[in-house]
Length: 77
Image (cartoon, rainbow, N blue to C red; front, side, top):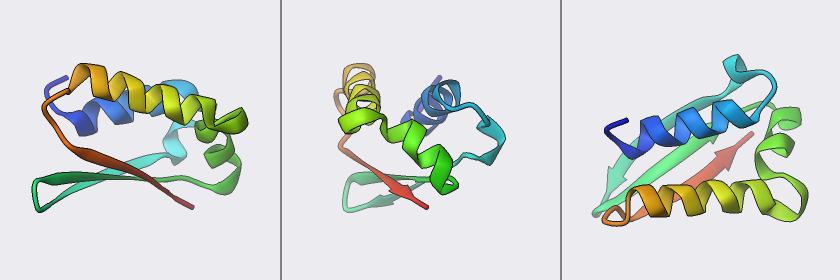
C-alpha cells in the first residue's frame, strides 16, 4: 500500500460485513488529506463500533503507518 487512501480502504473493508457497499474517496486541501467514507447506515455502525472504538483503532493504525501525513477521516451516510 503506497498511500493513505488505499490503506484506509483496505482496513475499513476488512472490518465490515459487506465491503462492496463501502467507498473511500480522498482530496487534498491546504496540505490536509481528507478521507471520506461513504456507506449505508447499517454499515456505518460497524465502522464506528461501540463507543467509537473501531474508528479510533483505524485512526491509530493510519497514524502509525503514515506519521508524516495530516489527514481527516470523515464518515458520510
